[in-house]
Amino acid sequence: MIFIKKVGNQSYILSKPVNITSTASIVGPKEKEGPLHQFFDQCLEDEFWGEKSWESAESKIVKETVNMVISKSGIPSREIDFCLAGDLLNQCIASSFGLRETNIPFIGLFGACSTFVESMIVGSTLIDGDFANNVVCCASSHFCSAEKQFRFPLELGNQRPPSSQWTVTGAGSVILSKDGNGPFISAFTPGKIVDMGIKDANNMGAAMAGAAEDTLITHFKDTGRNPSYYDAIFTGDLGHIGKDILVDLASSKGYNIKSNYNDCGVLMFDKQKQDTHSGGSGCGCIASVFSGYVYKMLQEKKYKKVLMIATGALMNSTSTQQGESIPGIAHAVSIEL
Amino acid sequence: MKPIQSKEEYQTYVDQKTPNSPILKNCFNAFWVGGLICAIGQIIFEICKIRGIDETNSYTIVSMLLVFCSAFLTGLNIFNKIGKFAGAGSLIPITGFANSIVSPAMEYKSEGYVMGVGAKMFTVAGPVLVYGISTSIIIGIIYIIFNTQSLILV
Amino acid sequence: MDWYMVLKAFITGGIICIIGQILIDKTKLTPARILVTFVTLGVILGGLGWYKYLIDFAGCGATVPLTGFGSLLAKGTISEVQTTGLIGAFTGGIKAAAGGISAAIFFGYIASLVSKPKIKKQ
Image 1 (cartoon, rainbow over the protein chains, first blue to last red):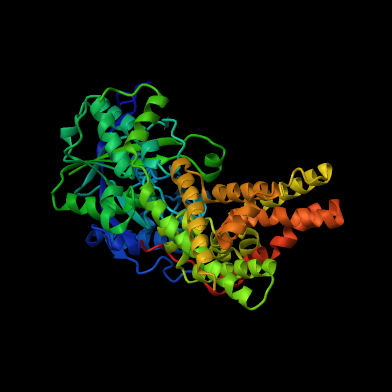
Image 2 (cartoon, rainbow over the protein chains, first blue to last red; image 1 turned 90 degrees about the horizontal axis):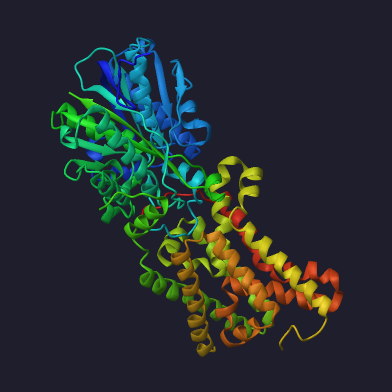
């Protein structure tokens, strides 16, 4: 069997690029104080947003982000064929509870913090394969619900090590459509699971950098592109430490990405002022930075070709306690005007 | 940089890349905050002594008052800021033990008062009681077996 | 008031906290493990009768850190064993430390009734 869309080992070039019709992002109060605040559609004043628990606050963020992206696109919701969403909470409750009233066929996804690009990849294949005309993709995370599930109670007086990262409170959502004027998803490279043997759950950037490097270099090799093909390359949430490691790893394999590469977790917060240690993390990090910042840059034609690589750490609190290492994953999607 | 071949090599490289905690600053803060908490305890103890309360009860009163202060500050959302600043300085004194009981109790309130507050209260402090009490029972049994002063170096 | 004793409590308590801080920063142990280590150490030192000397020297500088809590468990167990035998091994520890434990549980419950957790602004 010949795969006509497949190039190289694991990359795919779409026969007809998939259009990104609209985006929406909602973030929390700490992100509001960050350097990207003017790019987000809405910034919340508090983490509860009028809800009783952080879990339902996160669901509300998902719900409102999806509603916002649908109303911005002008597409009636009955013409949206799929809703692809995921988050970090157990059994993806933030997405499924947030979207239970949307009346759109729902496919829940989990790829840890790589969920956003994962959903864009699945959405593109659905559209490219003529299964759908419009697909809405969404990913979210919430600092408080993530801390509660993965780390310690918020009021516990502990110190965060310098390598720890700050889970972004927020969600980003995009609508992918068959037709439109761009920006377009032109190619993607789904990643393999890469385990670098890192066991420190407070150093996610280092655990995921190996997967990011694998996907990045595979993407270049498969497509025959090189780093200068893109105006900008963004990873999801490697943070300051992971970003440095990825630059080193890529240069050791002969790819220099120093000049046009950045990390959404690094961009999200001001390291000096906001005391977020190694930077932002979580599904909502790349989701909101793409939906807010990167998409606007594309619209203003400041970037013409962008590679988004969402990175995820495929662990939970049980696996950490059992002394397992942290496998990483990274999915790349190439977006062009 | 040359390509990394093994997981061990990667771990060494990562350790190099990861910044260390500012240990001197942390130790200094831990010293004076921890010392201050103990000094406050001692002042309470001295007041008890002046009032003629016996030593054992005085120590209990000190513990209870410090536990109360810690619970109060945790409830006001202040203790985590002290803890972030002082590290072990507020963790090691009995204030840290109290905080580790109060903070999950508050956190899991949304899961209800029985299975939330009641059950999750001991997620952090439970092991302290388990190991403390079990070790003390073992000490008691050893004492009975030897039943001699030789173990207790009085 | 014995201010010299207060000073000794300050310094001793501070040094015990420094040991804890070095453990946190160097070994990356979680808070729960640090607390367990200190309590267990306190029980053993108390059982051996050594911790008593530190309490005599520094007062609350030795009793307020969790090692003091541990030594209290040991002290209570041993004095109860001396009067009631084997049952004392099971009753003595908690009896001696009951004040602190009950206070933490009770105040913790009250705090959870009246207060809500908030995000760390910093």
